[in-house]
Image (cartoon, rainbow, N blue to C red; front, side, top):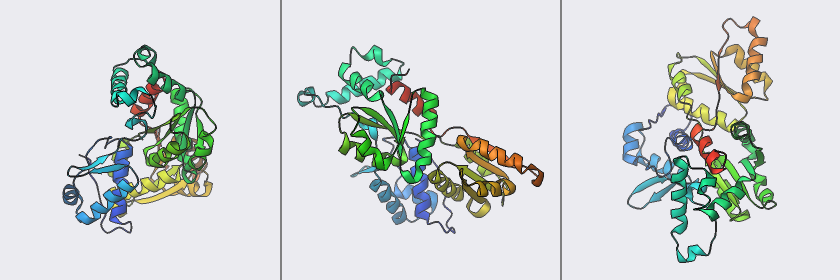
Length: 330
């Protein structure tokens, strides 16, 4: 069971701490689609929060589209994007309304056992043809205010999939997809609801959206938990959203025990300040070379160089493997 940590004496509201932790659990697939969230009573016992506060957080999660309430049953993580099924239309579905679901579940089972799309073509020609047409163009999207996380995803996908990947800001996605015949839009679960709404309006049949799970950062979280009290911890990233979320999660784990400093990759002044003060520095792959160069440049002024931890991945490995299958790449 995922454990949640709340710093009740913090300036950050307890509801914000819990909301960020649950959203992280969903985005990293610790809470996969269909997973039933703990009851308000269970979370109240674990965190010490009032059940009304937990109910408020659940309503926020429901408003963002990440979870759905089922009357008399509980709160469940929603299946999003293509997890919820394709939007392909066919006259056959009028006669057999459940046929599409059966085809999708069967295809997913075949793919899970190693079957390639070409091998499955004979059995599922319409579905496979649709997927292959969508795979001809792969887009990554993220909000303009956090386009850095889009850059992280695009870089990792191009390297892992070995195909061109185009980054499109969320605010420009609707106008962009109106100009293409088909494609696959990939985004983080943090942004999936907004992407789904855009796709459903701009291109309901020719473009699909697939959410990716982020890496769970288990080793990094373990390291944070072992840092001595009053340690300086530096965070450097392309993504302001990642910095904000990570800072809240670290605060939830350690409270005021750690002094956390953050810097965007473009902020040379703050990076230089961090390398001179921090005991440990976490950075994403695009930031690593810059941070390492800053440490080397300041080495004569530093008594004890900081420990550099490069977070190699943003996207979870399972998502990469599933994308390869979905796109007919293996």
